[in-house]
Length: 142
Image (cartoon, rainbow, N blue to C red; front, side, top):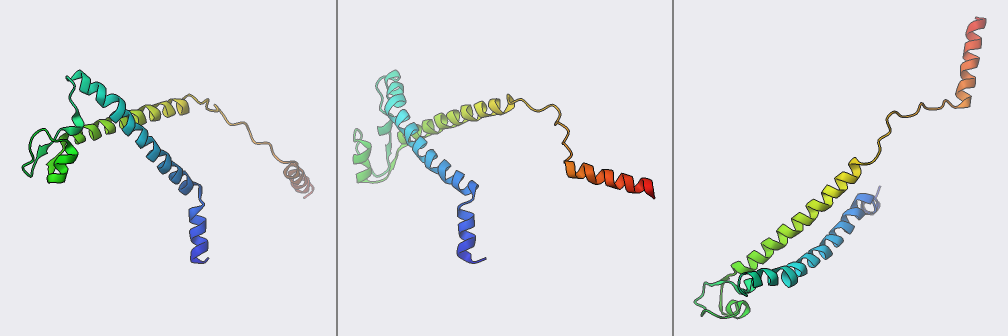
C-alpha cells in the first residue's frame, strides 16, 4: 500500500471525520460561550458589584498610571491583567458546566434505552437442517 493510499484510508475513517466535526463545533461553541460571558454575564456581575468592569482590572508592572484602560496600559508595558483572567476563568466554568449537563443527559438517554432481556434463538438455515438429516440417515444405515 502506498503512502498516499494509506493516508487516504486514514483520513476518511469515521473517527477522523467525527473528530474534525467535533473540533469545528467546539470552536464555534467556544465563541458562543465567550460572547455569553463577555456580553451577558460579566455585565450583570459587574452591575451586582457596583458597576465594576472586570476587563480593565490590572496591575501595571512598568509604572503605568492608575486609571488607564487595559489596552493603553499594555501599550506602555507589561501588565498583570487579573480582570481578564477572571473573565476567562468564568468562561471555563460555564463551558465545563454546559458540557457536564450535556454528558449527563447523554448518559441518561443511554441508560434509558431498553435492553433485550434475552436474545432470540438463532434460526437454523434450511440447508444446515437438510445436511443434518443426511448425516443422521447415514449414521442409521451404518
